[in-house]
Length: 497
Image 1 (cartoon, rainbow, N blue to C red):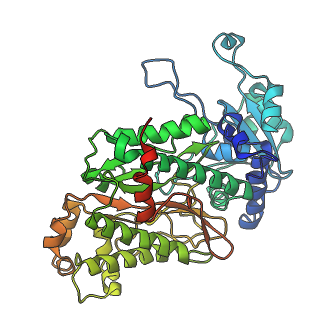
Image 2 (image 1 turned 30 degrees about the vertical axis):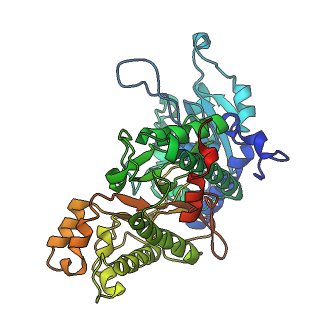
Image 3 (image 1 turned 90 degrees about the vertical axis):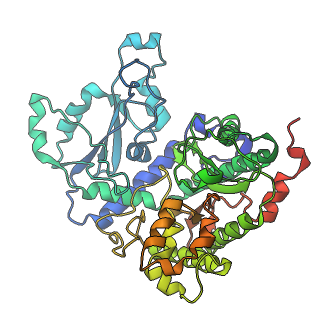
């Protein structure tokens, strides 16, 4: 049971997406940030504040005044819990306190929208909320020696973090001289997010469970009630929407049937699902701002063919082998190589890779890359590809050719949550490159591999917590063994009444 929802049965907090998380959830996030700041920023100015700007409504292109359904900027949400638009916040680093400022809309806005009061916002978020008109006066009266802003570039997206825009009025222009744009504050905040609080872990376990339930709903429907790829997405979203009231999936659903299952971020979801096809479903939920990222690969027919079973079991073995070896202090690139080694061994036993070559030799020459051209996994939390993978005080990107695509090179720490998602894909143009390479071609049984070019791909993805002495699969309720999946698919009660 989620501890932050005291004395409530699971049925009572299914509406957490609507009600929101309690202020204590974000108080703990702030406390962890302040503690990390003291540890990693040795010479920072204690008589200082940190200013962040939240998100605003964005009209859809230039054709209308209607805005997208709003999602708060992640760093702002992490520290405040605010899910409304047009906020700034000031964190007083010296006093470890926080104040919100909101741009109060014109009274006429009430004709069209609900407009909260400053008092109701203070109660809702557990943070003193003031009118934005008093923002610069507040800073002036505080008169900090340093004003920190968030500045930095995400190592995955290459996009710059949203930095607060400050336009000091004339009487407060002197404050511009104490603004410090160091990237280290942003890095420390990103680093803090990589280690989940107990409340975050409980929430991510809850989301992992419900995502497993939603995947099971699709598995049950696959044999009899799935006709198009989009039906997988529809069944999944219908489940999380009806049962947990969310308006969002965690990201665009990937529902690739047959040959489409080899495209890593396939999103068309418009093809007919044929009886002989394998189907890859990469679908996660977004609840109360946090996300899951889960992939299942199942047959349409209700029974894996011999070939589908063999490839699936290699990927499952890689997934489980990695999870069994995860613990604090383990270097994540080593886990990627462990997954590759397991896949290479399995493919060699199947005859897709030629005998006579050692796993270590093939790892060195990056043979597995041609079957799994992506990293083993990524940090997850507020964002699907969560922040903190590469920072100035963590290991740099791997210098080994063919491994620079890893989303993190960190050593695992207790309370990291990371995806484990090995896969095998038969991508024709990609494998053809290896066949033509004079240094690589000897490893590949090209004629046998060519017979797999219509197969597609298999991925098995779980969300995994690093514990004190090992790991915990947060999506363990999702059946993974072939026998369990086939039993689910062939239960006659799955037929729609």
